Image (tube, rainbow, N blue to C red; front, side):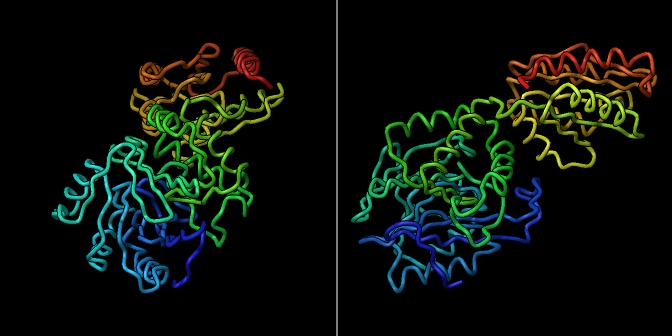
Length: 403
């Protein structure tokens, strides 16, 4: 690439984007690719913060050489050892044989597990609060275990008040020229992917995120530089993303609204949901989303289930059990600590089965899920005499929402 992006005095963005990758972690769809961010500090001593994925590393190595401008690399700081960040590290260490890898003890263990190499003569192990003097820039290392993986740390630059935040504050999506969140319409173009990234990747670890926030109290933050997505450099953008993360990490809904998750083989359960959605709209509910579990990728549904206050789940019978797609979605929600929401159930069975009981059993592991209304049950299709019961459920759901 041979093009360095300056994010602060002596600090350059040297990352790359992958627009061809179809799934993050081979699970989560990437309609707009993903960015692998890396940063280089050129001071009396030089320090590279994190590697990137090996699949797009050729330009990355060029970026580093260009930004170093003939200088050597003194330190390679590894905040996170997941392979989408560390698979290029061995090549960096080979190209810069004097560079010392700055890493946590757990991070070193993971590096050795992944690559079966001995790094002992190239490593500086750091712990909570340890600092590294680069000259002008004074870096502090703050442990952030389980803000995705257990070895994670973040790096704080005391000079420019920059937080190099590892996977925290990241997003799906490749860089499209603009590197900074204030240069784009973030709410329109990036917030949904930031939410989908957090909920599906870090969502289970809300308590760990809040512990990190506690450690950061009292530190001024002028810029947040994550390992994916855009860089946050203005007070309003920093305040916005911190507020969103606090909501997400404490499992509080961002907005009032209803997500109807549909499982339907022949259209009858879909019809039941469409009738209910229309009733909710007629009762003034503004935010309504209707998703077909067999059509919409789960990560997007899950993101909206965390975004909104209410949800309706269709318990469709399949081989006497819960429809497989719905079963998988609900178990993933439970794994991600889905909580503090109001939920309702619809059930469809033609002759019997345990679909509703299985759904209730899955969600019994979740905290603070308030069930609104009685489950609305049909046999094969909605019968005319059942409409009053569906109206009652719509009334109860609408009344539970601050419209």
